[in-house]
Length: 201
Image 1 (cartoon, rainbow, N blue to C red):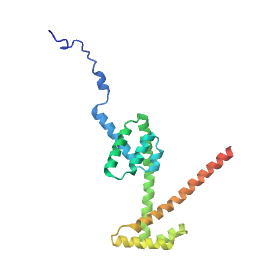
Image 2: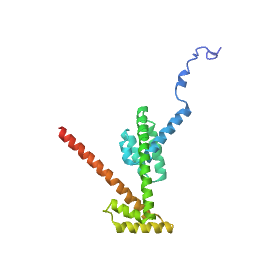
Image 3: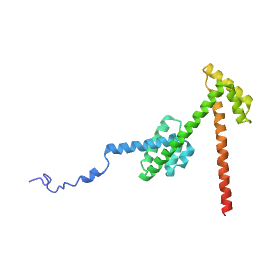
Image 4: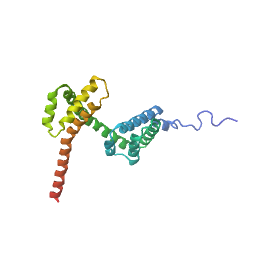
């Protein structure tokens, strides 16, 4: 008895076309890797930034949780979980996250430049006593005694190859000084907005 399945009987040439419309395995793997990397970028980002990224709460919570895990294996598992959740996002949600991360890069460049300026100022303080006089003229409220001690200790640390404890503390003081006018300006701006709201009522 002849086999009905043999040959082209009952076989349409377009039957398997559907299959090739779907992304290939390598394409799916590439997309999956990109989403995993996106999740990792969010994990490396500061928490306050992550909290402002438009994304589902479940994804945000998983990312914030991952930032707190110090155990290597636990962090690896949480990273995989974040990757899995990232793959559940639709194209628009992924695009919004990508745009947000891109916008950080511009901010990050400005921040990096500001930090380099602070590092140069710290090095100047160690190299030249006049730099301290100038700093005190700009910020008369500073504890001059404490600063002198820190500078002396930082020089000693460098000379003796010791951990840079005082060196870091000087940087922190300079960083706080740089933040203060910014915070004051932001506070002033929010007060102005409140006044505008009240007068507009």
